[in-house]
Length: 530
Image (cartoon, rainbow, N blue to C red; front, top):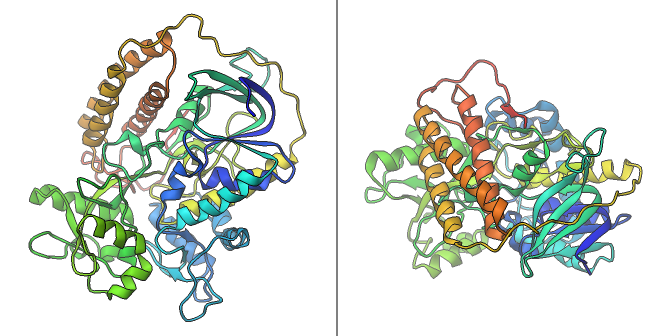
């Protein structure tokens, strides 16, 4: 049971996606772990992942092929050491999940082997999957083990307010993380949780945009908290927009997996049925996500469309129901029969390629603070993430962080101050938060979206500065709430995205500027330091 103050935890993991869950399971063999999540354990973006996990498992494939594909997608910005580290540990990561009991789809011709599909940017079939709901299958398997493990304390419906660091407490010496302040969403009380090691596994920041494939919890919390604590962040301008989000008034953020195009789905203009991808890239529908998203954005603006069509109706109904059962059922529930009709799709913010800077052991600038998964910037994704490399990164780095924590000497946690709210009152007008949230997401979509200009970025930064001032006053005078904390984190993350975008005077990968359409000869990271 978690009391108002809890200071005897070996490892506090903030976030319950695949990165956080797999790390918790690995650590729990000999550490006391607290796994903190804003909602239920299955609310993280990992559970929404349809596609799968990229790993070299076929004799016709090779690690060099996977490395090359990752570098090509990353537009020259991937760190080769990070790419090779992740790719070379890919097979082992998948085998670990199989050992946990994840029900991956097996090959129809050889039932002893995993079925491998292909996605955009991959030169070979190397995506292991559980039909079209891989993330949920993986997460449900791990949840069952976590909830029954005696060394794991699952803390649901809590949101981290800020990290507690030695610097914040005035302790001399190199900065060290000591835990976090955490809001109990039900009681409104802020708890003090002390921990020998703290891990940010908070996911991405898709909710900074109007249209996103991300769940509601993806509000940039980890990046914002790490930045406030003194960590460097990198490459925040590279926001991946998934090309194909279902366009329907009753479908909120429903992703149509890349594998639909991998299995022959074609992008077409509504009304005419004309294919358009081959006019934008020789790889057609199998071009990387940034290319496809820009092509759709271009065609929609040029023709005044609200959406384009993704058509896979030429495949047999049996094939579609077997490979895409969830997409088939979802579309049917909305009156779209994908066996005979095209799917209306639109691009949506999907993945944050940048994040908190870490090394290959997940370590940040602050001692005993780690970042893992989408919240981190390891050097793997470069300027554009290759499809299905993200869940792989979560698994490989969870093992790396576990090994690093296991090698650290045990230290005591000093006495930590409780949260002070003696000088604040309850908020008078919650409408300010909802209004500012809506304004932020709209201008980020309009000004910092798939295609950018200096003028648009300047307009976005001007509005961000106004919002920051309002939120600072609000935060200083009123008791914290979940909505206030998320808005505060979103505005901070938006500022980092815009600052990074303004720094990059070129077009590369996911960052496309009309003012700087060319790519510079040398690829460099955008690193921001507090």
